[in-house]
Image 1: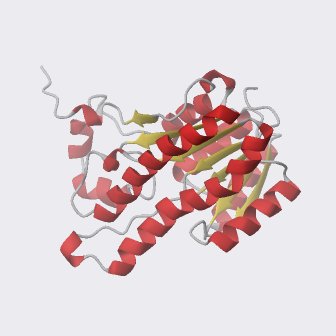
Image 2 (image 1 turned 180 degrees about the vertical axis):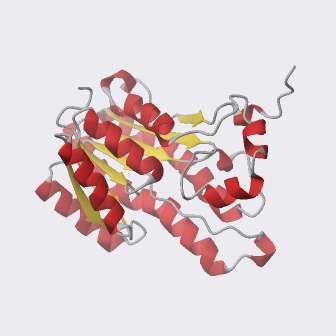
Length: 253
């Protein structure tokens, strides 16, 4: 098992990409602290599935955009599960609209959850990981940071900032043996991406060179590499996992 007895905190773990990562990490021996904001039933159902297979997992409720809640969250996790070896910042939201119509509250919510949430969680594990001279931080970004869509100025801004934050933090933590990387997914079959996928229909798959949408396990497999010993010499990187979408228009012969 590649993550045997490692304590992994995964935010936004109740469904989609976060759930896929939690389930794979658990299968590889990690002890899972699954963080959710509102989907309690889904989180507990996932935890039950992991434990039924002999894994170790526990669900924790917190809003990652709230620093006080995050501080209390990590204190509880360390007390009940153990010191954090792996942090996956997956929690994220979208509130799409054209910029000229965008409610300032929707701008703030997306930045606060996606960017500040990532900062809040990293801030809780950064020094303890440095002190132990080991640790893995994985931030879930998006191809939308560079290949933008209309109506997503807030989302693109949050993910672009996460990419830069990842690289800057990697430089600071590397001397103490802590790696910091990001994964930028393309179109993945999740509840959050459903509105965009449903609106575009089959056009999305035609844009992707691999001619299929991604699945949560496609992202989870990359996260596993970064979290394991195999990814120990990689830091400060943003890995694009999008089936070739970011290559641009491809003409099929």
